[in-house]
Length: 266
Image 1 (tube, helix red, strand yellow):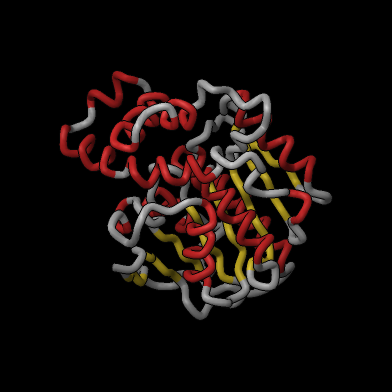
Image 2 (cartoon, rainbow, N blue to C red):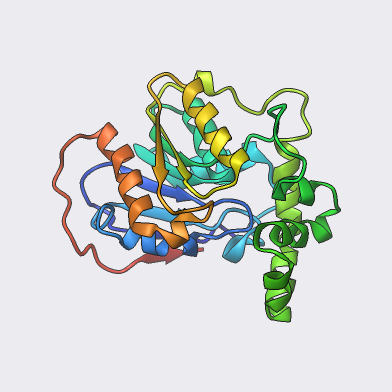
């Protein structure tokens, strides 16, 4: 079974814009981002990463490198700007390091860097990494949304999210288990925009700042009033930030508005 892919605006001028979601998320979370005015009319793709949402059975559990393979497979050689949220930001950056001729610019919103010496063990990823795959998703979401919100979810919803724990455990291990960092930001040779929320956790804000500082010419932007879920709470602001990355690749073009319905596969 292939990945669940939603494509919109095929044939529009300008680079392809691919949106990559974070851990325990899915592409539907970007629906209002791609519909917002800054991205309306552009050629966009969003997809459920392997192990999540409608791609839960797309293949065996994957680490960072395999998710990069999947992303480059979705891009399929087309010049692209990749917008990644959280773990999706790591996928975007590694893809750009590996294939800069394809990934022409990256916008990464609060990508985690748990290999940094100051990264707190109490993060959501840290909580998930301390338990087995069957409990990883629950531990992660309890840390992210709180016990009360988790327990208020319908039983079937909780069961479905727990099924994604295997995928979560595999990707978390891939950026934590190795003695060497999984990526070197200094190797990035394409434009990088780093985003963060003004209300995000201190470690995520610091990580964004350090990442931007590590890449010459990188831009650090802040979404006022947003936390880690800025794509859900402030979709227009996130779309404007992503459009900035597109503009770095191509300063001017004419993109038709109203590009028609989404094309869904997988």
